Length: 339
Ligand SMILES: [Zn+2]
Ligand SMILES: [Zn+2]
Image (cartoon, rainbow, N blue to C red; front, top):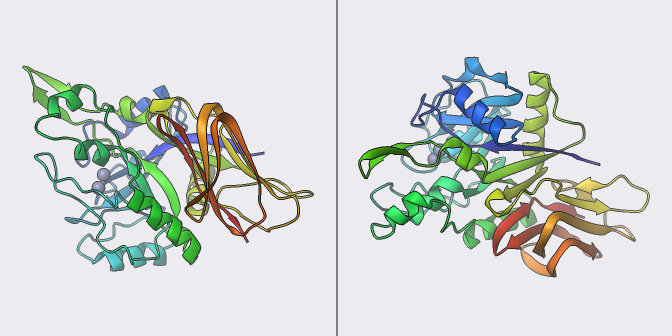
């Protein structure tokens, strides 16, 4: 049995270009039922002294390395690594210090009045912990065109596209290759204030985003109420790929499980490596009916058109993950590695 701990990562306070304080973010997270957040201001850990358990929310402070392109989320490292290094150098430097490093919004393509594309340039790069498969803010920004801007301004989550097929292909290929980076969803929230139509509006308040892209850690014990222990549980789950990602705009994903069940062994979950034995079954369960798709090394191998459970007798090695759709993408698991 695994304990699920909902949280969110990739967010900005007023120490960089967000509008809220560390405490504001923790309170917004609490309001949305999150147990942890990972704050990532641009090239600063000014919020670090405020790190800890705030109103029950384990609040971790890392940072985002943000040169002009190639943004990289850093956690579990106590020093700022310079954005003047090349991406290859800062990826290696985070790894050398034993930190957690996540490639942020790798496939951002937007160029419009809001932003330039902050893509990840070198997809041959290796040595990072994970990939931000879906970035809420950059997805929104890409849909933002002069014609549609007011519509998107007031109905910000209508046109979201989800992870790009290129990003998913890269992530699946890296499993086969053996690098096995963890997939995460990132909110990238700033709660920017913008003047429009005679008053000031907050684009994407923190609570809006925290109610959307949520990462559920799969833990062996409930998330600790001691900060140091909780922090280790969170970094460990991120390193191991023990995460089920959800777009909760399509409904809560609480209670979702993805397990590998083999006779005589304890259940394993995503991020885990399991041996291909007689009777090995992969089982995905979600709390509402959905279209459930199981992928092996990126190829669809099983599908339930409308249900809450998919069971699959597993006879072949591979890297297996699940997507659940309710009109749009709702839930995405990390891989179970069958060897
Ligand atoms: Zn960024
Ligand atoms: Zn960011």
